[in-house]
Image (spheres, rainbow, N blue to C red):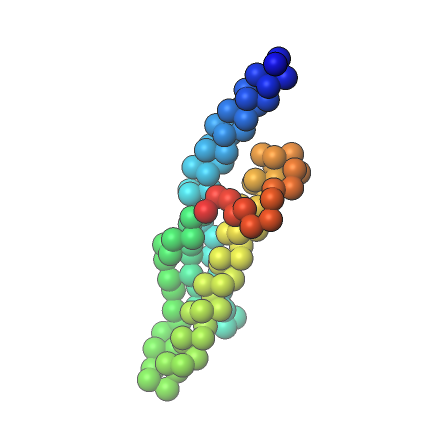
Length: 107
């Protein structure tokens, strides 16, 4: 029974550390870019859009479809950076322990 108590204590410590990492990730901001930086999107660690910058030359009716594509590409770039950063932070927390497939942290 002593081992179960020790395991429970470790689980509680891990849970506390995970909550701290999740709070830190919320404060992180990552910027994705597309079109050689003509469109830039900034997401926080939760994936919420915080800022968008669009080069003025793209704000014409003729460039509408290009602008739409660049916004999607910049968002995907920023999201990939946020996910990679979150994964790195979680691996630090778990000491390289592989989490079960499909388990997405922190969100």
